[in-house]
Amino acid sequence: MDVRRLQMLLQLSRLGSMREVADELGTTTSTVSQQIAALAREAGTALVEPDGRRVRLTPAGRRLAQHAVTILAAVEAARLDLDPGAEPAGTLRVAGFASAVRRSLLPVAADLAAGHPKVRLHIYEHEPMESLALLASDDVDLALTYDYNLAPAAGDPAVESRPLWSTGWSLAVPRTVPAARDDAPAVFAIFRDHDWIANSRSTADEHVVRTIASMAGFEPRIAHRADSLELVQDLIVAGLGVGLLPTDQPTLPGIRLLPLAAPEVRLRSYAVVRRGRAQWPPLALVLDLLAARAASTGTM
Image (cartoon, rainbow, N blue to C red; front, top):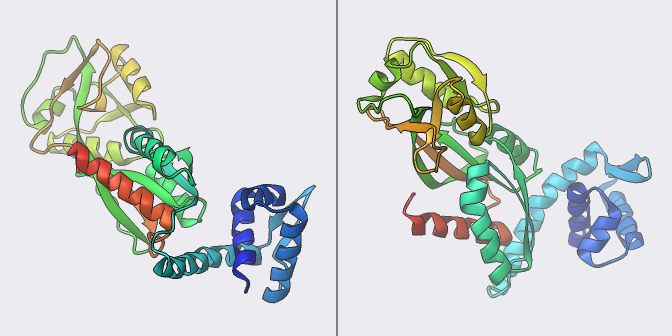
């Protein structure tokens, strides 16, 4: 099969429009249509079907597009073996949680703009399970995820995970509550009769809360669920509950952070890719930049 035709099919699967594919590859819509038709003849099956005034990939087209990722990556790797000075180029789709996007990806985006303008980022904010689902369906190339030391993520042989940084979390309570320094179960026990706040889009922090609460001998009453850390703070200031917040981030004046130890609570962030894809030059470059930034901040 013609490599350029496979590239057009892959771009069509990502962009959804022959016109956008033509713009991306610097050709005409007519050329894209002709090349996709020729690829369908080579494959012996229809690859696209009408969808109103546009087209969409058939199931066979989607499967071939998934194969195209590996095929094109292998071709690119072979080309780079002959031309090691080639500059990475292409669009990298990244799904990640908000803190990782702010802390890790935005600085990398600035580095790319300054030193590698041919690599473009498309960024989507998602919680880990959402990001991993998008990675599995090949809707993104890189997932920035997290787990907790007390709620480790399950392993998946289909992906490769690279540690980036970690940060401690504390129990956030209203400022009117006296400071408490004790082991985590003893600190939690103080709030056994309070309402608790958990994440609305992930169960990881709730698992941590329930784990420490069980060590303290009680069942936490999860009354509120919020994805935004800012909203969690607002709920705490309003006296509606207590919950976990990162220790190293600024908080509202009405918040007190109670340190947790024995056990401590740490959020651990990762860069996750589908196995065998990490050598694609734009992805390899971004992975290296993410690792370098994590090393320079001393939070790995």
